Each structure stands twice: as C-alpha cells, then as structure tokens.
Length: 222
Image 1 (tube, rainbow, N blue to C red):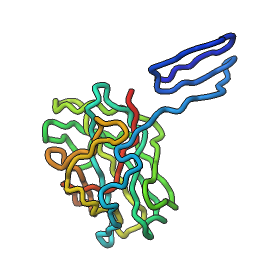
Image 2 (image 1 turned 90 degrees about the horizontal axis):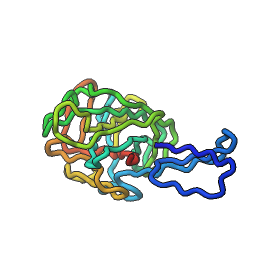
Image 3 (image 1 turned 60 degrees about the vertical axis):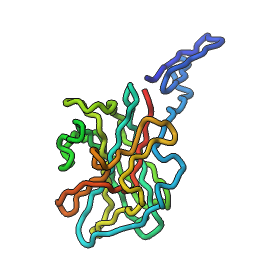
Image 4 (image 1 turned 120 degrees about the horizontal axis):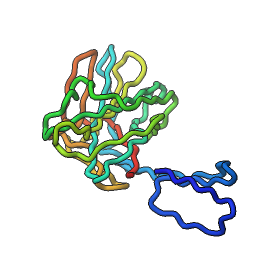
C-alpha cells in the first residue's frame, strides 16, 4: 500500500505499516519514501561464483524458480542476474517472469514456459561482473506456496542473452539445494527435489533439473 499524505497545515505526523510514503503539499508531490526491497542472495556471491557456458550455435533460455512462505505472499519488483567476468558482459539480456501452480511436486504448465507471463524487462550492455539488477515495469503478486490446485504460487524467472552462441552462467556448485533469502528469510530459491530448481530451453528442446543459473529475485512483503 502507498499512503498519500496532504501535509497542508500539519504540525506533526507518525505513519507506520506502509510500503511507500508520499508527501504532498497542495496536491504537489515533493518527496516519496523508497519501498524497502529484498533479494535472495543479498551482497553474497552465489556458490562458487559460476562460469560462463555455451551450448554452441543456437539460442538458449535458462530459468530459476522461487517460492515464498510469507503468509501474505510477496510483491515481485524485478530480478538480478549474476554475471561472471568475460565477454558476455557486452551482450543484452532479457528476463521474463512466469507464474505456475505448484501441486506438491506437480507443476502445471511449467516445462513449456507456458505459465502466465507476468512481466518482461531487459538490460542492454554493458553489465558489470557480479550482480546486475533489472526492475519490472509493473510489480506483481506471488502467493504463498501451498501445494493446492488453482493457486499461482511458484515463480520462474527466465533469462536470455542476445547473440547466437547460447551463452549462460552456470556451474555454481549448489547441488540443487534451496537457498533462503539472507535479507528477508521465508522466500527461497527453490530446491531441485519437487520443484525442479532450474529449467532451460535449448533450440526448442526443454529440460529441467538441479541447476542454478545465477538468477535472483527482487521483492517486497506487503
């Protein structure tokens, strides 16, 4: 929730439990407090830092999955991608967010990237080695993980780099384990078991398994 305040004639005010605060005088916005956002990895290096990989000529889309146990769900603001040093830092990247229905190890429509597309946003070169952040134009809601049918409670963020060399970041050495947010515990990179942590589409061929591709989540809690 964003709380808008008209301060005309006010001498003091205390506001709590809002995601953003906008200060207005005579219907003119003069200051907006930032929304506190969180990520999974924070300032840490994911795993061993990974390396750039290529599957040869063609195109590849790689994705990682996330879920939350927050009772209110979370608001997804954007994504981050970890980029090892190398020539791929000069390529454009596009990320797309999909919401799926996790049904206690069954994932509706996920293997085809057919879950409802909630947002798409990209970043042009040049990037930096390390974390690079991209914000979606419109935030969206992710429900708490439940296992019940009919609830969009599993998020996949898929990224694709420009060019035809099938570049992606991999070999982070996580072994398919989940990873809880270091900045706001309760929201996680999904584990491989039951969730298929990583998913990729190479030249139209789909696969999923215990692979981390350096993708992080930017979110806030309602």
